[in-house]
Length: 173
Image (cartoon, rainbow, N blue to C red; front, side):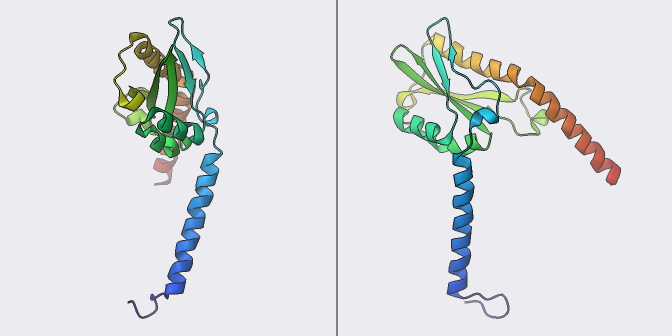
């Protein structure tokens, strides 16, 4: 038990906990409304000559449903997707279904190990089965390449904004 000016009662502690819970719930409610197409260029259904159809998942609910449907953990990435840090696509070829996970570098990705903003992080089938079909694997790589190409303009803008920001910091120091 604390005493003195920093002590708080059980009632105060409960009020603080309730306020924090309400803030988290409000933040989560905002994330539920995020349409990922507003965060990234190129999130459109793609049909490949090989018969592969790739569908981007564009909100948290779709990402959660994908994890449930495909029996793997991608649903746990829903929040990262809404925050612009991850992308998920559902790929099909005939009766074969796979899930593609793509990492998105942060604003300062210019200094990251990869030169690309988007990187293929994982590509699995039902219950994390290895994807053996070469057409699905090629489509996954093509999606990542397309995202990097369509978002190059944003990469250059981010680099310019970072340079301006650094210049301002140096001038004010």
